[in-house]
Amino acid sequence: MLSQIERLSREVDGRYASDAELTFAIDYVRSFNLRVQTYQKLQEIESMLVQQTYSKMRTLDPTVFDSAGTDISAKWKRDTLRVLRYVAIAVLMDDADTFRERLLLWFQTIMRAFSAQRSCNLTYQVMQDVIKQSLTAPQANLVCPLLELSRRTLGTIA
Amino acid sequence: MLMPVPMPSRLMIFLAYLISLLLSIFLLCVLKIMHPQIASVFDEAENRYLKPDEIKLIGQYVASMPERLDTYRNLRDREPEIMQAVVDQLEAEFPQESEENLERCLKNALLMLRYCGLSLLVNDETIVQHRFLDWVKPLSQAYETKAVDSKLYRLLNQQLSKALSPKQMGYLSPSLSLAQDGLLSQTAKR
Amino acid sequence: MVIATELQNPIKRKYPKKHNHYGFRDFFQFDPDKGTIIDWNEGQNILTTEDFIVGLVEGLQEEVGDASAATMYTIGCEWGQKDAFFFEKWFEKEFDRNMRQTNLLFLLETWWWPFTAQGWGRWEVDMGDRKQGFMFVNIFDSAVARTLGDVGKPVCYLYAGLFAGFFTELVKKQLSCIEIQCYSMGETYCKFLLGGQDRIDAAAFWMNEGATARDIEKRLRTGDMLR
Image 1 (cartoon, rainbow over the protein chains, first blue to last red):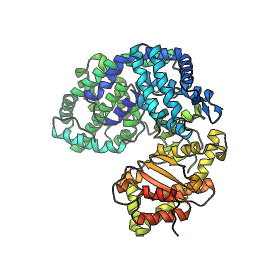
Image 2 (spheres, rainbow over the protein chains, first blue to last red):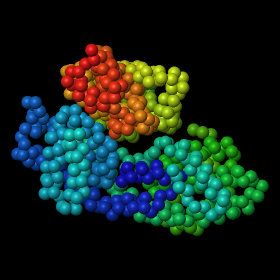
Image 3 (spheres, rainbow over the protein chains, first blue to last red):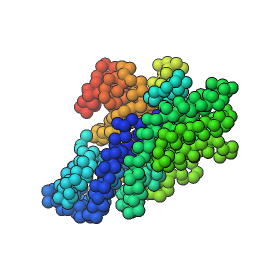
C-alpha cells in the first residue's frame, strides 16, 4: 500500500484519482485485520520458523550450509531472519514493491556474488512449507507469495 | 500526462490546460507520503518489529480511510459545480479585475483544492506545504493577488460547506486552512 | 564530487552500517530548501532527463564530428578513474575493510549499486575469463542507449570509458573497453569487453568485419588473435 500511495500521489498531481485508482485502498482496509494478525503471528514464531526451516534443509541437503569448507549456518540464519522480517512488514503494509526495492533487488546481487542462489532457492521453498503448517490458510496466503517472490529473486541463477 | 477534469466554462478549460503544463515541471518535488511515522515502517524492518502503539497508529489511519475516501470522492465529483459558482460570484465581485488576474487566482485555488484533497486522503499536510505553498506563495506575492484570493476563499469555503458534510469538512479543513492562511499571510519567505 | 559537511540522511544517521540502502528514498536525500540532492556516500547529484543525454551526444557530434565517440570514451575513462578513488574511500568507511581484501564480486556489486540507484542501468559481470586477461560486462537499460533508441550502431562510449577507467585503477593494469553489442543496435542489452589493448583492437577489427558479440566471445576464448 505504501508504494501504491506514493505512486498515486505522483500520478494524480494536479488532478483527482478515479475510483479505479482508489480500489487498492479499499482492498487494504478490508484486509487490514488479517494482516495485523499475520504480522503478530510471524513475530511470535519467527525463531521457530527459522529453526524449522534450517532443520528441514539440513535433512534435505546438508551440503547447502557448507561453503568451500566453511560452515555458513550462522550467516544463513542472520540473512534469513532479515528477509523474514522484511516479509512480515511487507505483509502488514501489503507492499511487495517496497520489499523488492529496499531489500530484494540489492540482496539478489549479493547472493549472486557469493553464489548462494541454490541455498536461497531451497530456503524459501522450504519456508513456504513450514509457513503452511504454522499459520492458518488465510494467513499463509498473505505470506507465501512474498516468500515465493524471495525464492524467485534470490534463488534463480540468471 | 495529466487528465484535466471536464469544466463547465471555457475559462475553466483554459485553466485546466495551464495546470497540466505547469505541473509537469514540478513533478520531481519532494514526495512525502502519509504520516511520516507510517512512511518509515520499513526503516527498522530488519532490526525489530513494530510496537503495539505503532500498529495502532496505522490502524487509526486505516479506520479513517472509508470516511477519507468518501470526502475525497465527494470533493472530486462536486468540484465543477463548486468552482463554477465561485467563478460566477468572483466575476461579479471584481468586474474591473482583468481576466488574466482572475484566471490566475482561480487556477491556484483549483490546485489548492486538489492538493488539499490528496493531503486528506493520505493524511499528510506536508503535501500542501511542499507541493503547493512553497511555489504558489511567492508567485501570489509577486502578482499581489491577496484581495482577490481573500474573497475567493470566502466564496469557496461557503460552497464547500454546502457540498460537504460537517464531518467531511472536518477532514478537509486542516489542509485547507494551512493553504489559505499560508497564502494570505504577509510574512516574507522563510 | 562535492562532499556535504553535514550528515542529512536520517536513515544513515540512525543506521550508518545499513548496507541495503539503495532504495530511491534511502539513497538520495532531497533538500528542497537548499535545492540539493545528496546521496548516501555524500556525493552531490543532479536530476536530468533524456534531453540531457541527447544534448550531450548531439552537441559533441556537432562540435567534433566523428571524434565524439572517442571524446565520450575519454570522459568515461576519467570519470571511472576518479570514481575508483571515491569508491575506495566510501567502501572502506562502510565495511571497515580494505577494498583489496574483499570478495571481488561482492566488491564490484557494491561499486555498481550507486550507478543503478542513479538510473544508469543494472549490470552483470562475467569474470569467467579473468585468468585469460579479459572479462565481460552486460548492461541492462543503458541510459544512453535507451535514450537514443535503435540507431544501428553502438552508443555507450561513456560506459565503456567508465569501465576502462575504473578497472584500470582497480587492477593497476592498463585496460581498455569496447562495446560489442548494444541496445541501440536492436539487441536487448549491451555487452562490453574489457581487456588489454590488443584484445580490444582484435574485437574492434572483428566487429568491423561483421562479427557478432557471440563470435567475438568464441574467438577470444579459443585464443584467436590478430597477428
